[in-house]
Length: 323
Image 1 (cartoon, rainbow, N blue to C red):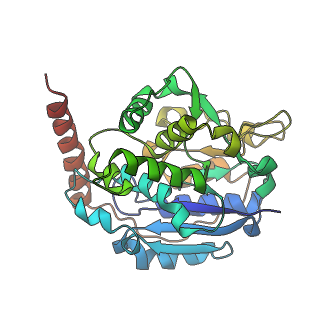
Image 2 (image 1 turned 90 degrees about the vertical axis):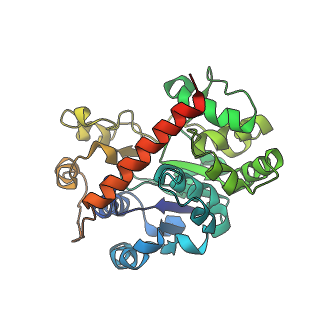
Image 3 (image 1 turned 180 degrees about the vertical axis):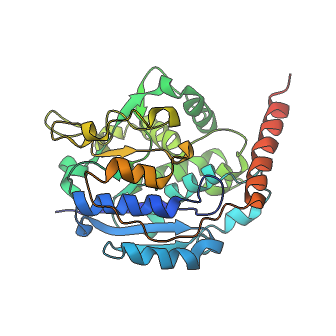
């Protein structure tokens, strides 16, 4: 059986991130139920430098998996060059980490997790890589055209928003196709490396998946590395995840864990701010969950910094677009 790597960028400080340790505990609890640790060659957890020591302590609870906690400072020196709060968005920071993953692994494919993901059905590496290609979940690009168009503009190609495209985390990416994207960005913008090109375009809503997919599409390589679920196979995503807090109360978890249900993974998005204990109440009937004690880093200073960043980017964006 082939193996796959995994990447999980984690922050634990800030308005959106204070409960991420609990969310990681839910994720790993689901993986213990629905797969085995030996599916993964490496399970990389990438954290900011000031969270590294604390994250190492929390990660002991997940050490039955081949977890490696990695300090961002060892690989992402470019982040320091964009040090103003409005310049380096946590959202873009984590996307760059995902695209950098091939430098840290020795497998062709890697699975991208976020802390708010959890498994709903059994899987192994062959489930994720049917026929040696990445199992991929597609959705119409018109669901998120505001993300496809900026990436297409950066790559100087058509967004083709009338087509389907890869959906968001969890997903599986190819190391080869990531490197091809790096190369393409450096061909288009030779004055910088690919990472600094993306960092310098912090005012537009490019995303890692849209960049990756559009470039692989341009190169005609999608069918070589990606495949959608075939009849009798479960897709990557459940038919319905929780993307808004309004959906949480009525979300029927049991329907997604049922044998006849489609989808290997679901999401209760972290920015719904649903408390982890309420998520546990929904999921506990379907797999055992243990939440370790953790510190919630959510000071007024962190919240003020995040608010300043968002407002500054909004104002700069309006100025950039002009009247």
